[in-house]
Length: 141
Image 1 (cartoon, rainbow, N blue to C red):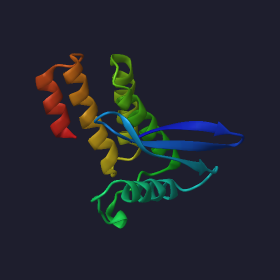
Image 2 (tube, one colour):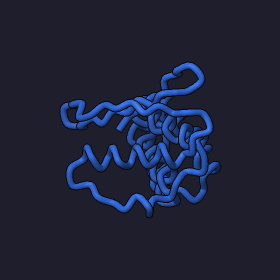
Image 3 (cartoon, one colour):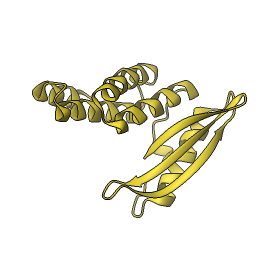
Image 4 (tube, rainbow, N blue to C red):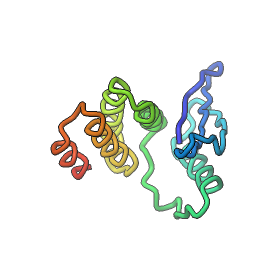
């Protein structure tokens, strides 16, 4: 899953793409309009429903998902995931900063911790972070 935010007057549009890694085949693309002062939970529910519709066999109770605290933390998380998915040395370092910021903003949410662990492992895989320390950091998250 990848996404980007596109300005639209006073609001923003989050464009989300679901891509099959094998062969980089675009499975689905959808735009979600963000309205100022909209609760973050609304965006999270739309994304969760999108994933449930588009990924066969994926099932979870959306009520059990620990939500991000605000639209700001949701946007920081999505920017961090975008940088993580770019998979360059610079983007991984940006992702590390953004996801760490998101963990601090929403310490009770699971998603930023998982993405942060993935970031440490990706950095180790790319050779820009010590592999042993990356495993320790990933396990912490």
